[in-house]
Length: 367
Image 1 (tube, helix red, strand yellow):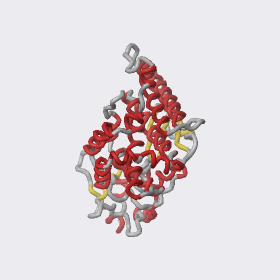
Image 2: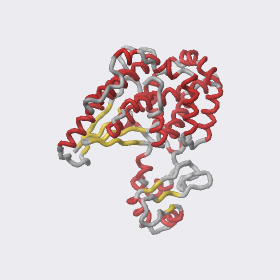
Image 3: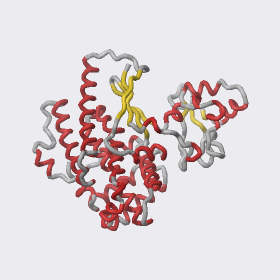
Image 4: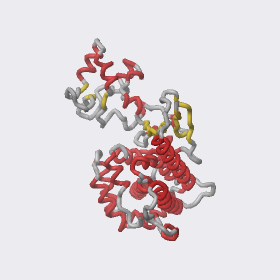
């Protein structure tokens, strides 16, 4: 028995199916888990034959999963002309493969519980993430499916570390969503400074005797994330770095190239954009909360909590950079366009662990 925790909006998610403008059944190689594959192979009728014809089986004794064979337009062979799933229609939701059942949900597992969330790559999920307001509320229920944990010394240590990181993440949430609002840049400065201090605290507790990176509070207080980030001398190499990452959609590549070419104008127009977008600036708070909720606790694996906050900050600021470029070009930025930008970023970055890792450890001039 353990806990199952999720954001307040999690249970409101519903796949919008044929209404989706960017179907997750297009452009991805969809793997089929072993249990579902076994079920499909037992279907002995016309639909079973269609399944067999459209599944690529892995080599025997390999660790590669079977997958659906996409067509020339990278569509799943079971996505019909109405953009509905023929497997869902013919066999029912319970017989979708695991990845289709879960998407866009993600899960993080801990010693005595699980956290779940929705990924930003899905437009229905992005709608829920961006429009949530107020302090991030996490609901928790008892999960009877989880086995009882027998706590030995190692498990106690892991749980203590998790609880420390959970409390630090909560503190970061308080900085993002304080009782008294503060300007966006100032909030991001406070967030980064808190992460620097937390990393020193964390290292001191787990690695006694380690020299702190910032031994003087004044060292941290002088650092400004915003002044350092919103600067062409930082952004030019950062954009070059983003262009070296694996890119799936040429739209993302061309967007980065256009931004790099126009970076001076974009920076000159940033304050005008922030004024114009004032009523929607909370979306950047939502993005920070989302990235931290999803990625911060991975610090339990590598002890690099500062890098998890760095990833959240860089990702949110890059999305804002794309927003400014789009607004400057089109003289507007609609809610739908914002969802598309966030979705594109997530698909390019969050669903490639190498990209996520490289951004997290991107060298900063002030840390």
